[in-house]
Amino acid sequence: MKGYKDITGDGGSNILGQVAEQHAKLQGRMEKIRYKIAVLSGKGGVGKSAITGNLAAALSLDGYRVGVLDADINGPTLAKMLGVRGQRLRMSAEGVHPALSPQGLRVLSMDLLLPSDDAPVDWKSVVQGESYLWRGTVEANVLREFLADTVWEDLDFLLVDLPPGTDRLPTLASLVSLSGAILVTIPSEVSQLVVRKSITVARELPTPIAGLVENMAGYACQNCGSLGDLFPLGNAERMAEEVRIPYLGRIPFDSRIGRCGDLGVPFVSQHPASVAGQAFQQIAVRLKEFLGIGG
Image 1 (cartoon, rainbow, N blue to C red):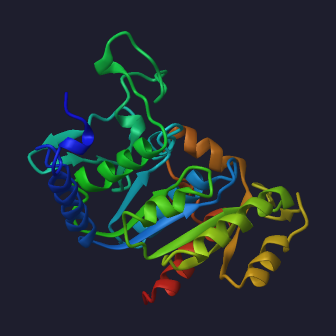
Image 2: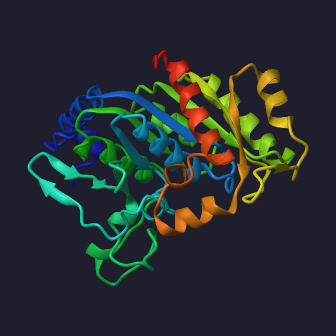
Image 3: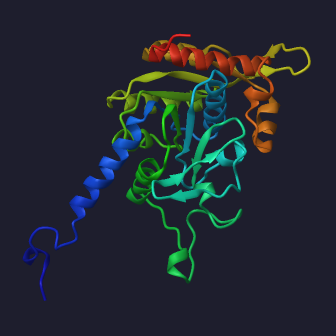
């Protein structure tokens, strides 16, 4: 019996050739996308997906071609929030074609690949071909395949919604040259404690930090439009000043944001004149300013 030391090269598997081929395919896909933006926090429950979906919709309303990748493999939500859940993905010789939302957003999510509404990504089956076991480096490989095997076509923006965890941005940055990273927090000190760690990690990468978004900052009255304080306002803005990153703006809590997500319609496209709707649009403007996009 031969041991590993007795096998020269890769044993005929051509693993290096396969990796190089996939890397070239990924780079070819990404070259057709002008700006790649990561949306992250490190902390769960701060509304990253709502921010991602509505920011994508705001950019689309401005006439930009926008794609959205839900990189949360284990808890995907953007297919539901953007109204594409249940769409069958089309396959061609080019690869997988993402779902198309009513707003014209190109969307890919693990939710579109699961066999049923109740099926989690990590589950066991007596049939090996039906087993989904995603852990550690396997999740990174799935993300690589999402980027490389999807026919994104020519886009102005690709927004990538990252799951909680301070290690998520380095994984994505190892695959794609990102144009910027948007960090999301809520006014609580607990959230900002974790976000600070994500900022520290981001600073160690070549990815530029586009800025900080403060979600659920105050309560927006749907009747009069006035704002009430849920937390002391200004904490996140002060944190952005302390760590020397741009402050992109605050989005007040508006219960219609959640309801629109349940209906699969971006809030900003339904309520553009609301306080929260204008906040989403202003964040889109500031992102474009950061990227040097005029107009």
